Length: 136
Image (tube, rainbow, N blue to C red):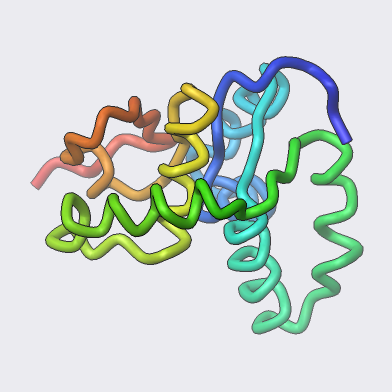
């Protein structure tokens, strides 16, 4: 587990972008190098994707835990995630999304994500998008 200061919280979409070398992976790697945390809820989301793809989730995620602070989903986070529901329901945010935002709020750091809908949120949490949306 890391001991440096946490400067951002990454969500599942960001970690998956890094693991699968998708666009935005470099932004996520930079966030991790700078000091990042992730909610255990989001780790579970990532592990689920890995299992669905018949990959060894434990082997793939083990090095992540050496570089990213994995935060338990505490009662305070659960209540904060629930409170975010009314402000995020129209954007379709999941429990995992709200868990990331709740952790970012608790740690007073930006949230790092690939989820474009987060850029429209007004919930008092800075959002760093790892890739720019295509113009229509």
